[in-house]
Length: 463
View (cartoon, rainbow, N blue to C red):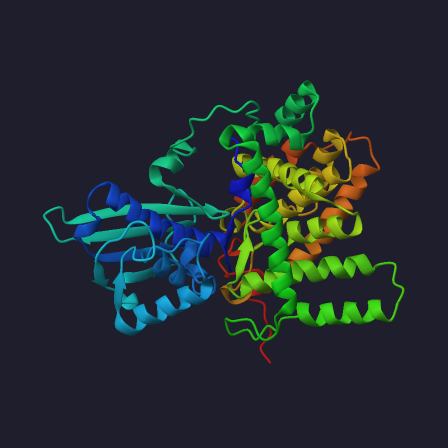
């Protein structure tokens, strides 16, 4: 099934789509599954075990907090961070947790002690994916125990074992007018119908919901991204986690405003704004704020920065923004289907690399590129992110993640501009570069795939 643009762009909270949003969603889904089976009311204890990358970088990615919030019924799309923080303090202070109290699947209040009920198995990787979690719900009746394994596969997506084996969602029953599974098919279908990639995606989306709802949803995505940029530019202080990383966006913003007021001439001033907007989003993400996955939290600043650049410097409007997001969504769907958007699976090429590719395609489309030029822009962007490792220092989505988004945004614009001066013909196809990214990720050592066991994460000089 071709992913929806609203699967790839989702409202959530930081710092990680795979390590925060995914586990929160999985814990809440456990409650739904238990209620469906008529067992939720009988639960007396819940034990959660985190495996592989989830355990190795879970503390820095707030995975423990996410599991607790999910068990209380909170969902990433609606969580108020301040409310969640207060709820966590109550659980940790009383060692009592009300299952599903803040969601639709309400269960009993149970004892909950993180020392015994939340287990970390970083040295164990389950076979289907490095981001695995096992829930054991102990029951008061004769049924005894319900055990469920979920995988956080990137971008906030969660699958159980059956869905992983089927390699498709269990509800994949819709019939789309353009069910593309490759870049070649995407181009052939669009060109054959005489439509743009954005129009093709819109036709698919309107099978799922009315046109007005799709347009409103796309506008809401832009508004949420823009609001995140604005929040990030207002905040000051030190990011949580212990590294002492200071927020820089506010200072850069003040400097740019001062330069504008002084009429300072700088031919590269647009680059400074793009850097600022990407930094602002990812500082918000690192602080656990509200962001839009694009397609992940770790890469959430690239698409908003490039889209805002187009909107501000090229006089964009609602239609152009929708074209940008629909086109970016089509490219993201190809990566999700044919490779991965999980840093724990393929390294940061699957997060920043994919976001860069999506943003390049979206920007090219908004600038009037042909379908062939759009595909070329997406290919150029990923070709020069191949092999990008995911090695966050301290397991925190801060260094190198925040600056990496700024670099990715600039690279996306450059890729689009290169494609726009060509005719769309190029040597390496998008499908080939996606396949190469997947193989590169498979060959990459685990210490470079969101485990904080290699790269920058371990090569820090202590002073």
